Image (tube, rainbow, N blue to C red):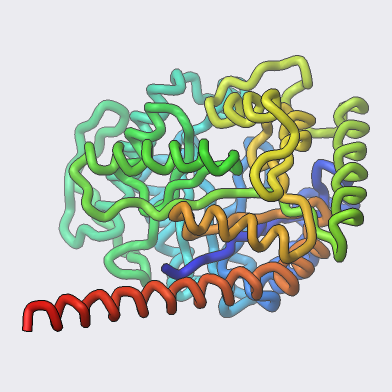
Length: 380
């Protein structure tokens, strides 16, 4: 089973620990960060979406036009454009990138953030809309004849696109969420289902929930599973934990000073199930399994990808392999020093994981071959 690594396609050098030094869209930094991912063994980078951030589609197009190998994961919120328009945007970007695009559809887990751009639907309604939106986009990518649509959230007649993706039959669709409504929508439509980093036992439960929803939707091609972490690595365990506590102190200091722009105040309870789950795990303890550390999630109020994996490159690699052994095929990682951490992770962690995955695959194939030979001998 192959493994993929997803990094971050940030448009500036700011993070939870450090204020950015330039504008929101720093072209030089955006390209430098993307190039580092390409050069150090990452497969794909995410261009994230926020109500006030630079347009990720244009940032992704800029990078895709400059680099030849790195693949693009484009985050998109269905409330910001009509699905037929979005389908053309995505197809054009797939053309620009020569078939390197995956689209991550964000339903939105925070009412206030959604309302910043005029979206006043309830969360369950947003999941329904996302599912309908994805269905339309898929059809617009593949239909060569005009088609009509009369759904709950969208209605149009006689649409046909003149621009199609390079990838056939279409690019992959990525989706995330931890509520029953999310499992239903993503289980039915997603090629990739994205989870935040929880302990192994809880992750296994979520994977089964996603797969059950996919089966309930009549699917036999189950979604690939992606899990996201914040790796904190150093040459020794002691240095890694010292680094982790420095990072935590910086997050708390910036939070106290009100410098974590776009994140909830520490007294606000998160509305989305994923963040609620992260905070519940953090309330149970600080350390889980081999290397999972939760105080970074607690300090940010469970804001998105916020649980850490702490240790030497070998420890963090083995922790990632524990998730791989659960069935996770895409490992998302983003440090706090975006550029240097991407280089360090690519240099020191990714090769270990890839080598171990190849070893596991060889052993699995050997067992299959031996079993087939035994069965053939028994029936001879």
